[in-house]
Length: 137
Image (cartoon, rainbow, N blue to C red; front, side, top):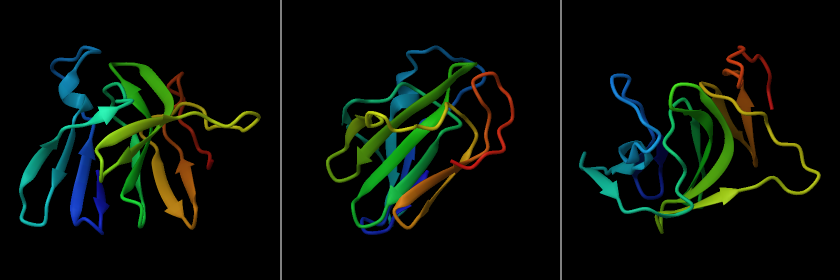
């Protein structure tokens, strides 16, 4: 969940229902926004829509109306290492692949993410073997 200040919206993506789960849980692939009048709206999204997930991070890139979604867990134990950009203005998801010869963070879930300057930093979380991570990438 992130605040996008220029549109005055809180953006929510992903989630979890511990009582029932399947990999085609489309309700956990939805994007919802909360406007300044406290009204929730289910957005009609398009593009490279990520699989359902929980324990991921989301960071707003200021002045772009874009949100970066990284990692998380799908189902009970599939740790993810993918990155998506969600354009809040067009409701379009785009999957981002690392550039050739560029290192990318290992898959992780339940980590933190912070935007500092022009870089997003990820700290901690759980690895694909459910080992606790204590690194900053």
